[in-house]
Length: 304
Image 1 (tube, rainbow, N blue to C red):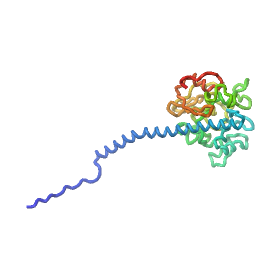
Image 2: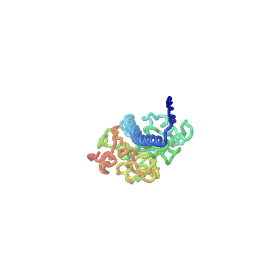
Image 3: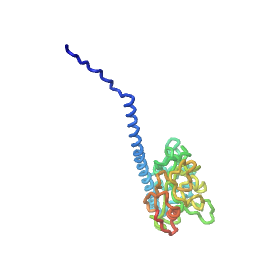
């Protein structure tokens, strides 16, 4: 008698429930391991962009000074226009001449309300999105606008040092200080030296109940509010304090009288010589005060 071996039926090609759960667990573990690495790469790229923006702003200031016999751009000027801040004044040196001309040629003399050739909402200068003034890491920026001014005023992640670019005339109180907030010194005769004086630092586009709006005219419109300068003495506030480290939430934890950085522990800072450095937010208030004051004669501390 011949024994016939009948082969066993093969199991279907699908996974069992246990195998499927194991695969899902492995994928979850891999995602958990990869996500921090992806976030680090993304932040590194954003920080590089932020550093490049700060560098370009510093070079724009240098080129402005080169055009005007070493004169630094004013924190705010009030001549034929109804107030133009420093970020607006350096636009031609950031390859933004067209935007600058829209403001200068404004029909009513208000730079920020100059008409553009673009459709709404960017048909007004103040609503234009200015990439050179945007750090990708800024959590208070909403598609190029300050998060509390969407479609109204374009935001900036960078603010300029009033101690370097602005002065208030004696006896002028807290107003315009005459027709301009011009710097005391030219780029070539800053007493403490260009490499020892801060010119630019990060500040959130939306900060507390105000923010940092690149076209805001400044002046008597509130230098500690929506303007693009920090260290606004004699207006007070915490102007001598070092940059804030990732204030969260920006709507309540951010102080508009201080620089603020979205990066971990380091504020991207531009110096008057056009160089850029990362300043640790744990820097002492004394060293920071020395760095933002162009003529105190003090040596920067070891934590600089």
